[in-house]
Image (cartoon, rainbow, N blue to C red; front, side, top):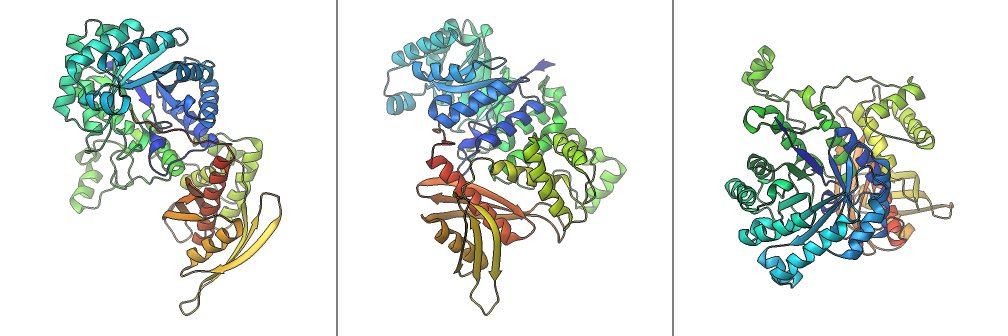
Length: 515
């Protein structure tokens, strides 16, 4: 049973999903959970792309000790040097260098000859090896590259010091047979291929990212790259949780395994879903709400008699049925702290007291607080940890089927002053948003609005996600409350605060690249 390295790029490639923008504290929280999940390598970002990306990569590298932290870099000396400054404090610093190798990338994007691409790659790897103990080189768009050219350039970058060679299906184009042939061809024709680990990185444009990743592993890849829940550019990446569980359940076939702590999968998936604002479809493999649900009477009868009749994955395997300590309004701070730590969250004393106050307020309204409720409270706290320019204090909405909806909102502004205004709208949510927009100034173009309940029941928490363009900044926001209108107001203000943070340079968004 060979060990496959897991390379998680949720914080870099995953954040490139439209509308996803993790703030500094959210990135730290995700990195901590990925370490707890047991991923071998965390790609924390693209250090040279922005000040915000540099700082988050540096802090993750300095903090995470159980996983190797890497950063992305072009084959540019300045990028490599900047990445070193961000990553040098890590337990096992490594660099991920990429360059396009397909004819279409070399001619139209890079405007370089194949010989220039080879020379540029070799020099970049040599320079990186002067600083980094581990260097990974990626052939962007490898699956549409000429095989003989790949053989030639891979041999030279391995000689230059690259320890990992990544062959990404950048546009999600190939089939399983084609990617098997690619990896086997490289292993058989690159003379020094035994000196490097081959890595697979598949996109999901044709819905085959997981299948293609597993096919590459069959053909000899020793590392698999992807994201939690498969989030990422366009249709996303291979879902790491699906790959890990497939290797576990079908170890008889693949003869390979990851080092992931599988019962942390569901918790990690839920965290990424909440922080990214990208809901997990109920029918998604491994982590969807329906993954272990049985409605058919025949299926129910079979599962009750023997779960293996219709379940090849036990809920416990991925952490669905973990032991749950129920909290309520009589629970104390110590029990609450233990609970959030068991859910994978870290909080300062100030954060703990603030969220505990929210928990107590919620406990007065709900008879039982679930893990999902607590995760929602923590996610909202992390979402608002960057500088908060505005804060919702009170909200009053007048609505009737024969009346014009009117919202009165009280905010605390950046100067700490209390301001109030009212406006109307065609509906209650529009009235709330019209009022807030008038109070803060500027124009906000709402592109997406989604609402869902955290749990079942009449007293369930509402979670609202918004995507907007505010003064040229595309940002997302989240809000949670018992009342859907309050949650809507919080989500809107959260997005505005994020946009203002970006504008002031406190949490600059990174340049997005497709590898």
